[in-house]
Length: 136
Image (tube, rainbow, N blue to C red; front, side, top):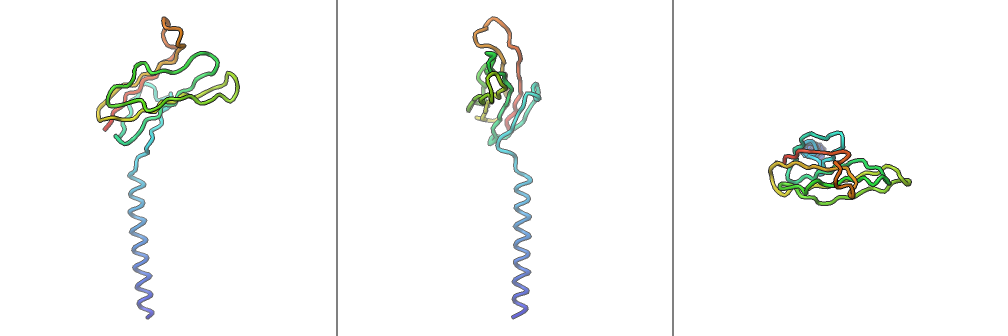
């Protein structure tokens, strides 16, 4: 009777050890679902998987009339899933605009976002953000 309890404990220990080993392997190999991109990554290249989403977050200043807009809608392999602006905590305060881009296929594309005033069509943008995206 004592030997069977000891054997049961040993088997339980092995099962737990194997479970932790496989659980650790899944966590280490996993990629984040959302890849966050900030203004400091302007002009860089980002590689993502087909199951990932890019979230580009860019600072804006409320009350100035400036806002970030896509220069052109992304072409394959990306599509714009959503864009929005956070509320300023005070009138004229800082905001963050974000763009969620979702892969539609594998390939490469440039995402160009301009910071400008919509009514000043004859002026160049105050700033431009460019990101080269490779989807694998």
